[in-house]
Image (cartoon, rainbow, N blue to C red; front, side, top):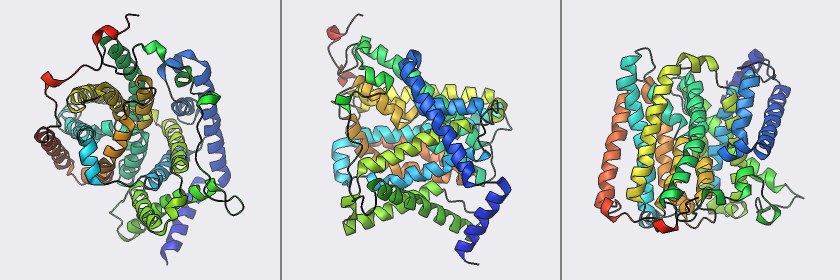
Length: 475
């Protein structure tokens, strides 16, 4: 039997057992798209939702959770809603390399070394501290907890719903079926904390004079609250790089992204067929396929016809669907079962993240420290999209260049994050999670020493205020 025959048999068997048809997919997609539109309508019309900056994708997921099969059962969503997030995250990671610019490590080190150290520290410390907290403290109180329970915090906080889908799927393949629901729960709570906590700290910072580009929180433009852009502020969604007479440009870009994601799936399933005990995450394989395609396209000039805005739009659309399906697929029974340890985990994780964001931010950002830190707060508790939303509140004209710096700084961080997401399930299921978390902690300490050695670390006495205190509004 060929590898393709094996794939066909596996897929046919899965569909037959679940009574899956294309119309099941169409129904699920139709319902979730309808909920997304309802979520957008709520964002436009409900002032409280606007004030909290709750994204429509999260509202859609919550509606799907309440009225879907895991709630009241009024919406005929299928059992496959828990599988779709794993497909969507493969699409997201397959698209990443195709829209990434070329960069040189020398440029990253010279321009954004401190912000790289900040981003890398935030990642490693959240994984290390919370992983060790779960292993060494929570399991003493609740001995029946899974060894990897602690890492469900960074899975949802730093990683967001995408990482929750990826790691949850990997753990499920290795025998822990509750991981996805736990990760999706921490990711959902993380987004809410990013919104509520972010707005609280922004209001506080405007009063203290820590914001460099806004004086009063009430000065925010209406489009940031409603999410609807006026005509004069609308931008192009991308360039058309192929003639519609041959193939539509959107179809061309969608084809590139889906091929990268599908290639990752083929590699993962091929390895699993030959080595059943080895579970390679599909999203990691999709990222590798995307990198290979990117190298080939750069060498053959095909990259001249790939529009980053279009691939980013495809990735963003997949992310919206991922969040909506991910939240709707949360199994409330699992959440209730682990309610108390989950609350303890998230309280400790929230305190740790707050400390890292603002303490490290003050000491590693020489300019616009609050703007760069509030972006990190949104990112490390919710998603990068939430980080961008918070950044736009405090820096509407993007004068801090925070996104430019983070874009460069994240390039060397991305392989570390993908490696962690890939090996965490494998190491924990093999009983080696403690050693992995200790390695992350040691690397964090070494990185702190490196920041001090390279004079990236700013002593407390040298920290400058963002703007003079007397310019702060008293209103």
